[in-house]
Length: 284
Image (cartoon, rainbow, N blue to C red; front, side, top):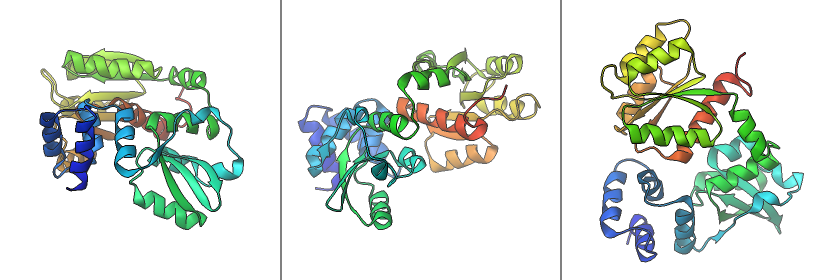
């Protein structure tokens, strides 16, 4: 039985999903280069906690939760750079007898494990946690931020969400509002362009296929206007092929997120875009 099926079988036995959903996920995974857990999460049929539990059962890893509230020696934290920790979702827990216990959202990331082991001279012991728990620990112990700090900082930013599907747009807006961002919504490219010209947002999240004016037309119009040309735009598309992603990035979109939208990925990509384009604070 291959690794994909073993992982899926554990989810089946745990009652997390049914056979039809598993087959649908396996079909979507074929040729995507993504992990099965990532596909299932994108489909909205499993949570981070479900995936962590399944991986722990499948490979015998220990799980760790609630570790953000503990204190960690600087010597341990210095084993992993903050930027690297955020990029691959890892957090150093402790060192014992040349063993580094490492919280990971993906304990099968051998590239990260091997490079960290080579750099530190320590044997890495993966411990499974969710990306949310790891991010909370990184914010507190590396970035020295509290949840209140995160929400206050997010309130600096205004975001424009453009999508003609009411439920999709509402879900995106709700996710970003929970993160503290100020949200303006538009139902098509024409409305989105009007909103951006009237009050330029710090970032735009837009679907590519819409009536009246689609995302491509809106993007070209934004690029032709000096007041909106530098606004980073994240494209959303149900076409999740590498070719579509490459085409959108070549057009000048800042980033690309395939549909269905994963809330964690969306929030992380938005935060990354704002940090890269504006730094820690938005322009006055």
